[in-house]
Image 1 (cartoon, helix red, strand yellow):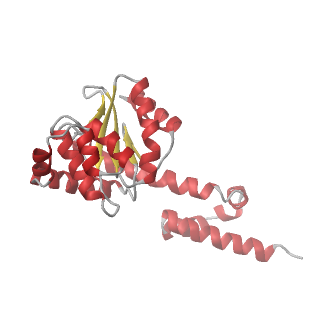
Image 2: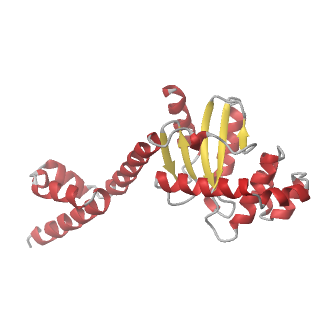
Length: 234
């Protein structure tokens, strides 16, 4: 039996995926420029698992371009909202949500990196995208204003209870409640949303290491490599 129908179907699927990834113009160029008939086409058809990797690489490339246009604001922490060494020269930015299971899973990797690198400064951008997360993010920023962000951050992920985490961190509760409702805190959350949208982030955790934005619970090794690469470029 001829394999032509299967080959045609695979070509159509690949073209459609390329259209979703790179736009219809890019797919048309690929399809009609002759590339579709050479060894590149055969290789791609035989290795469809490369397409998600291509899509991810493309999105990260576009995010890096957008980051270059944003200036330094995304690297500047809200007062006190820093993990690790506040004066560290090696900077990692994390967009996080306390109700995100992937953020919780990434915490041990982040804490390991902080323990290993005394020069690491982790700027946290509170980005409450899950239902019920706004209250926790506001209290976290209020904790930052009291110089107790790290204690609240760890306690919040451990307990998932805002009041319990605030008390465990030793917050002045009356002041924290006022600060959590303040315009400064509301403005910070709005800015973080704007930053995330500008970078094309679609969920938490999301990261910036040097000039490279990327998303997901990527694990210790990739985080460490990204930070090392950023340090080499600085």
